[in-house]
Length: 255
Image (cartoon, rainbow, N blue to C red; front, side, top):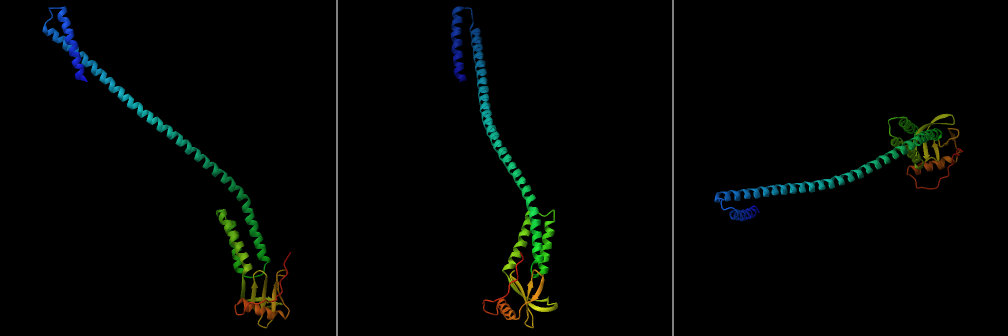
């Protein structure tokens, strides 16, 4: 491009020189050359300035494009962070509602667990006297857990439900044990048969039979004919006899 501009400058200078020659015969060849060179320098300086302006314009255009890209990126980031903030606010609100629900549940559940534990203690105290040590230890452990400030409410609930489950499970068990008991005012050794939570019976070596009276909280002697039936029941429970129907008295249920 610079070569074309220089040629144009030379042509203009030649034309100018010719005009100068025509206008003034006194102009020397040296002066014409100086004029030509001055015109070329002027044209070159103008072209250099134009090139510099072009470069600056190109640089400004590139900077503008970069700024537009950065503006678009910042707009995306602002929108994205607004979405993040909205999500975090929703999560905070959800946690706040959960906290309020937890406080309400705790206010209702803790008294309920204490009431259930108290009711279970009363049931065991009024129940047939089987596994007394094991059941008393479980209730004491439960009461200690419910009174523990640092124990989580979920764990307190779990232990309460576990104690209730075990007590309910006793109703499905048939058990035969040898125990010392007080029957008819005497301390005797006998074989005790527990039919779930339905009844607690004892069979003495002399053939007498007894049943625990939950209302009187004491053993009482059964009629003489019951001993044979009870002996059959003990053999069935010990899997030494084929299962058959047994007629045994059932304690009266407390109202």
